[in-house]
Length: 364
Image (tube, rainbow, N blue to C red; front, side, top):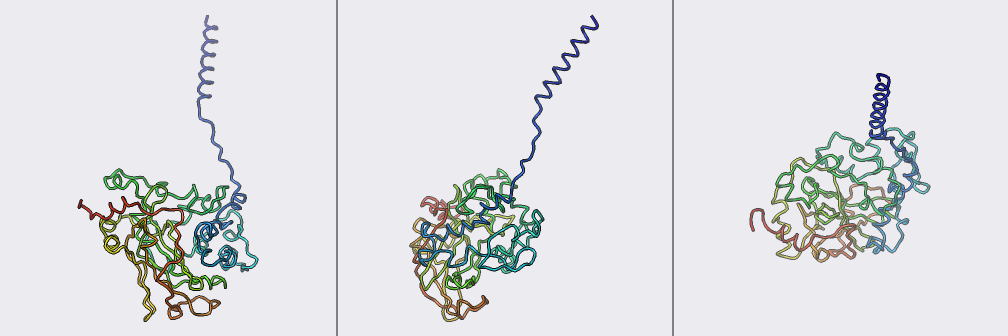
């Protein structure tokens, strides 16, 4: 009897152990990614974002130039050297791992990122924008997929499915303000400014000189993007006195812990002037002293934006081949009309949204 009992207990224990063993979650083995293969389809390699933005098919600057993007060197934009210091020749340049890495897999310093990402360099070195994330590195927020791709082709960064989101680290706190603005993206309230470089001179770009009048900040356009109200910037360009402007969703590294005050968006001067005059003057050029004044604050983009937004376009009258340096007196006014206007990957605000923003905070 004792022997049979022992056998029974042994069988039961064995069954229990097998059951427990089968019910345990399987060991997760991280799949190794072939980053070199991914890189060949990434936007860093294909430069497809620039190609899409520029193309006539998508309403881009090709409509004022009538020339392929290859004539302007945009796709071959690069730093002066490889990561190890070897000089780069524009004529033979093709993106590869050694743009950023001295040896494959080594850690890339932020300064290397800024060799190519000029707007971000401008935010830091020229405009001295403050950011709550200051002290963090690029890769603290950006994943390897952001840099080297996820194996898929994308027409532009704005169409990528793997972009960094604020909610990757931060969660809505359930406050009344957050709940009320559920369809407003975080950066619309917490970003202090967007930036742009005013009036890209495309004749200079043909000579491989990246030339604009100066960086512009202190404003933020609001558009509809991915189902939410999102900040956007503008970029203007001229080519043989033909004029172009684009509006695109934009993120700048100028995030504040404190959100905008209600009256910075609701019932602000920009929207009051729009409702009173039917115009939003974005830039104004003073030919006498060669100075540019620009709009300030939040700019809700209305449905009739093409007839509403007003820009003064200027062109460079120096030698397009000359190296780029501050030359305000080599710029002159050419037009107050936008010949081609593009909005990329976004939509203007609806009439209903404009009416909500038109109401001053606390007033019905």
